[in-house]
Length: 339
Image (cartoon, rainbow, N blue to C red):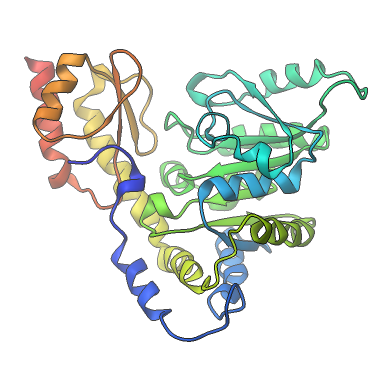
């Protein structure tokens, strides 16, 4: 009955088992056997050499990634409703020691090359203005929309042409890949992405995310990111418990199976609430028209969700929900519409 956020989901049994299996003595910090496997496991998943770190939170993963891509005097081009702008309490500026976020508009919280190009043209090449040094996008976006490989590549080409770093907030990366049915590489390094925050917690993990670096500059950026992780207090003494979760996610494609379950649950609700949808449903988030009275009716039946402005609500499904578990909400929404 909880549709607040996929942060509130239970932990996948396979992830819990992996944590239990890691519960024995080993080296501290990231010197353990599990952390040592991350590069290889994620390189296999992305079909390219990858440098991977476990990071405590998604906010830290995004912010540390940006700190390696953008100096304090630089700017990060992003969407005006991106998580790094709206929901991270200034953490990117804190980690970068003052870099400027350069928010831009875009339908469904997506950036387009034209809008980014226009912003770049407006920046004078002198010391009086903040130079753009990176682009950051979210896939799936804050409104549950998915960037296709071609859309990511178009922004990647722009980043390369202007010498900008390219970061992807992948808190719901698995949901994006599950929707597209593409290889993870197709919307990351093959499309020009330099750094990816690879979501774990929203997809059935307990704690911790993965920060991935691609390209020839990956080793240097990883070394810098390790310093940021320690300096910010995010180097866990028993990091093996985070590494074990990430490995459990990628081995056997648990990350994709979980995302497919969440996406399917969202689509089943969308089929019922089609006339109410504010955005297409491509991942596991639904934004629907809902009056205050209708919201109160649903809450009285035990359904939890966030209001999203006046007359709207956000519903988020997760990996643990199937057709049977979402049936009560679907029925309640149908009753509201039919009534």
